Length: 171
Ligand SMILES: CC(C)(COP(=O)(O)OP(=O)(O)OC[C@H]1O[C@@H](n2cnc3c(N)ncnc32)[C@H](O)[C@@H]1OP(=O)(O)O)[C@@H](O)C(=O)NCCC(=O)NCCS
Image 1 (cartoon, rainbow, N blue to C red):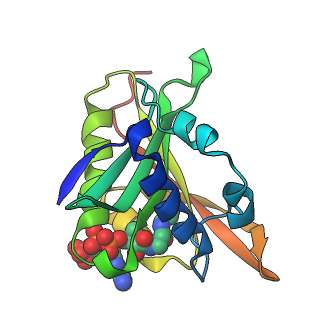
Image 2: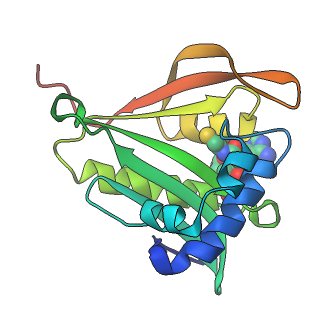
């Protein structure tokens, strides 16, 4: 198993896995699958252009992309001390082998190397126990719950807001 940053050359593999993630039931993501299906490949390529402030990590088994996680930093100068993670997904046949933990841990290792980053945020559907357990084990805490954050197939889903303080506060 290899973990590395995705690049535009991974776009077709990324698209396949991303659509599988958005179609999964019960839902793990609020983004409608139909919206992403209509997205041109070029738009997804843009998403895979790594910068200092945003990247997607992929977990590969041989040549197959089987897991992802996205890191982005808030853009405004007065918010750049915060980042967020999203899109954590592992293909069902590769679950329970430590891949999600490895992906999330790599993001946190990178984040801790950046002295300007203090806090990482995420949202997670309240029914996604596996993800919540993982995030808690990495030190994330729930600081709020957004009720009926989105609907999917006629049902409403709540989302927990979680965060992790990376650096000791200096003021
Ligand atoms: C959540 C998810 C990414 C976990 O992937 P995974 O590779 O199976 O996870 P790991 O094997 O690395 O397990 C890491 C931890 O997650 C938790 N976990 C994973 N699967 C679990 C399950 N079925 N039940 C309870 N806890 C579970 C455990 O705390 C586990 O740590 P442990 O092995 O020390 O007990 C995967 O189940 C998934 O893709 N789910 C759908 C998408 C999703 O919910 N994404 C989160 C969006 S915020």
